[in-house]
Image (cartoon, rainbow, N blue to C red; front, side, top):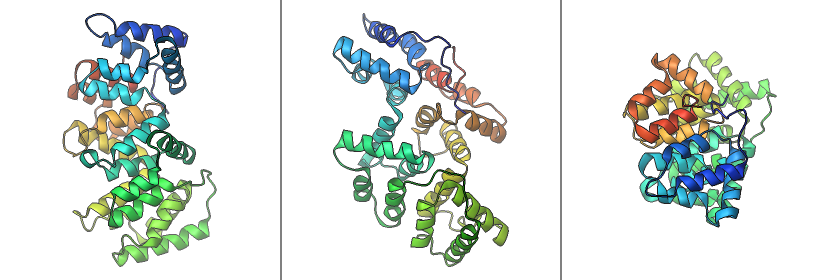
Length: 316
């Protein structure tokens, strides 16, 4: 369900590396050439280009891009170009820093990546920052947020579709009891949401809805200004309907209604090779306008061209 347009015949990586090097030469940078190459190569192809570029020119492509580009366009290119695990490790580390801290980004990475992909993020984090993702998340969060986020980023969920119906019913009852008692950060709620497979969580929440007549997130909306409850609801949305979570993030970012100004570039670069088609469908269904049209209305120049290419609407 990705949107990325990769040409039928892709030039060999040494040609792409050579063209990118040329884009940096002379007085100005050829941003159009950068977009025409990088925005139309998948993760494996981009990795090869970086490897060949380093061998040919003795420089890191990411560092050269950082030197040559600026503003929103630079961030989009620098997020898009690396391997997904390396990108997520960078985003997670950024989310633990004082001026860019975000519990939401940590939750998003933990809940919308597969178990294997999240494991690779933790490995990439080790390699780059010489410490573990878990220890940084634990150190930079407190209270209920720490209680939820540390097990989320540490998780290695079962990925299969098998579901235990008896367990789903009993755990739906546990969730209802705890939520009714307003024990929102109870260890049982945390345990269920951070260890069960996504299929099992879905089954449990379906039983919750059927047995108690309300979707769980409706019951978690009683305290509208409670930031932990907002994160808990987003966790459930990410585990069950990630396309709805990402649609809302994009909508709020484009309409400038949210606090997550960096969401547009992050969502487009992290989902382009995953589920962007589903997100675009959800966006159109929810807003009666296409995502590419709203992006074109909200952005301009090279940044606009880069994002549109990544969601499958740029020039091929």
